[in-house]
Structure formats: structure tokens, C-alpha cells
Image (tube, rainbow, N blue to C red; front, side, top):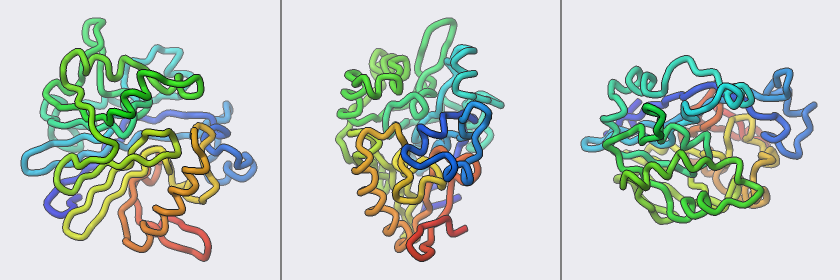
Length: 276
């Protein structure tokens, strides 16, 4: 896919599963299971849909998935089903390898967004993208280094501290432009410091909601994850962003949607739903 003069690809990392009750918060199972059928452990099926953007001079990866550093017990707990290493997916979808990536961007450092930042080599955790600058907001980095009891389990230091040691981690403002037309903006809700991603070229916009709206099943305003630290701010952000997405015909990226990572949106009465 091309957006203006940029090449764009969606890179699915691997299937994984989280508890449906946690994923839908106050929405009763009898309601949400019609959209996302749970397994025998009440978990719903999801993916990690990373964004690749190629410009004339840069090869950019936004998010790196869940990573491959999990123990057998951890992989079983999260229902991680990996068909191939993420590096192979990158090569298959883009024609490039990890060493060709020049910029890696994390919207936040939760393990399912930053897990592929690093890999295990001979028992050591090292950067997967050896020639890349890794961009993370300063406020998110500080939140990851000083988590609360509420979100400590979402952060794994092995996904960013090797980047500090290698000198590849760059701390960025709460809102910034990666390259011309590719913006990261902090939006409170899921956490205090998570960012969304917006790519605008030649009158077309691709907007990635990250964990603000993780799947198309989360489009109803009140369908908010139990993981969110500030659910009322998530609600306010959805009420701001979703009507704009409809009116401006954004291509929307749903990071955790297993079946439909990209779609435009439409209004059906009071509801906002996938348009295609």
C-alpha cells in the first residue's frame, strides 16, 4: 500500500490471548462474547499488527510485537502461537531484514508493543534492530522505569534497557514528528503516557489507535479495557477521535485486531462501525 510517496505495510507478529473480561472491562461477557468468542480459559484471540513505513531515506517500524523471549509457561499463559520469527515476517512483507530498519518507534513500552525490540543471542538480551534508532517518549520511559502496582506487570525492562546500554534509545517529547507526515501524539486513557500514531500524505491519513481502541470490537464508546488506568479519559478521546475518523475518511489501524487490522469507519445511527 502507498500513502502519498511512502510505502506502508502491516506486519502481524503472532497470535496471543488475554482474558476477555479484562479486555472489555465493565461490558458483560454475555454481550462481548457475541463479538469475540472466548476460549475455554475466557481468553480472546488477538494479534500485534506492527506498522512499516518506507520513505526515500528511512525504513521505519512502529511497534515490535510481543517478542520471542518467553518461557514455555509464559507462552502457554498468554496463548502465544508463533508461526515464524518476527524477522522472517519483516523479510516476507517488506523485502528487508532487521539490520535494514533505520528507526524503531514504540507508542509505549508494554510487553506486547515493545517485546520485539530485543532478542536473545547466546543467552544475552540484545537489540534486534542493530542499526536502528529507537524512539520512545521521555515520559513513557520514566513511567516504565517507575511503574505503579497497577501496571508493573505490563513492563519488562529487558525490552528497553539493552537499548540504553547500546546507545540506541532516544527519548522524545510527548508529541513529535518521526519524519515528515508521521506523528506521535500522547493521548491519556490506556495510560498517562501512551501515544497514537498518525501518517498523513497527499490528503490521505492512516491513524493507529495503539491500545486506546485495540480492536474493532472496541469501537462502541463504552467498550473500554479493564487495563486502562484512566477509562474516562479513554472515553473522551474516543468521542473526539472516532467522529473525526469517519468525517475525514481515515484508514484506521487496530493494533490487536486478529481479523481486520485496517479499515475505514462509518456512522450507522449513533454507532460507529467498520465501513469495509
